[in-house]
Image (cartoon, rainbow, N blue to C red):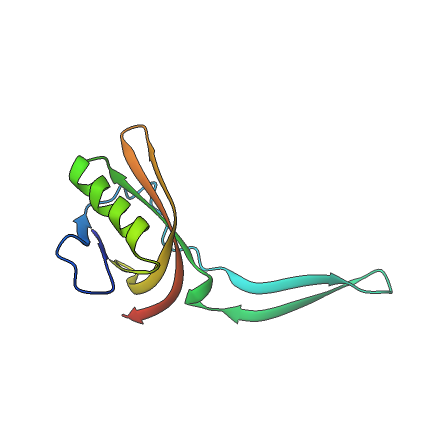
Length: 116
């Protein structure tokens, strides 16, 4: 189950849905890492750790008119939303919303984790 909600009180700004688990990606934390060439022909790798703010969620939902209307409203009206899922509760922004093949695909850039 996935819950998406507006950050402020909005009776039309919340959705609880069952996602397509094989296509939904929640567990891919990225490291803050960069690689620079050095003058001696080698490289220097700077690894600054892993943070929830570098995560990107790809959520795939079955298409339903009501669900699509709510997600489209969240995307258009709010710069950030809350996402509650099996990984915890997060605050982030919808980067991309796509309807394809009877499914809704939502890409959310996570800013921070707000709960377990």
